[in-house]
Length: 114
Length: 114
Image (cartoon, rainbow over the protein chains, first blue to last red):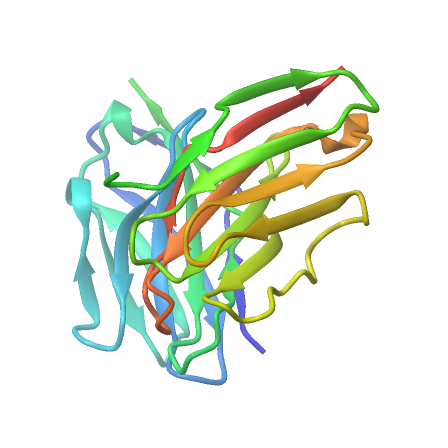
């Protein structure tokens, strides 16, 4: 069975400092993994996806994530936080073999301090 | 349209009334999902449609909830005899229907039950 664990429910960083949002997954298959961002009163926007190509995935707004199979992790990083990055972030896993289930993490709320 | 469209964006209604929420997926997307997001929480899967297959209704919380989809287009989520605990944001997402592809989300319908 697949599962996703987001290790931090809240993360606070100062503007201009690095961001690290942690995600661990469990999957019987080679999974597809996604990070989404949700700003207040908005739907979820896709930041990036991993689908068994390069293990380092670059997304929008300067975010990237590295797939580490040995650690079953897919952590989201950004070198320098911006005030506009303050939002909720969700890690999601799906089974690329054809099933439709997308398993969502519980989310990490990122706060950016001026 | 270019993205997933949901209407209304906000709905306020009295307890006991029925409500209908609408979702227009991205053209060509065969898969459609409904989720519920309570305040400050993650996404709760409600129902999934894939083409003309029987929908997966396993996430519907009670028989007051139902959903329909016309072919591979518009979907409606109906909540009968609304209760205060139904207050939430209802998110719709669509995807191409092939394994491993990301979902695309609408901005949601914010439902408030008085």
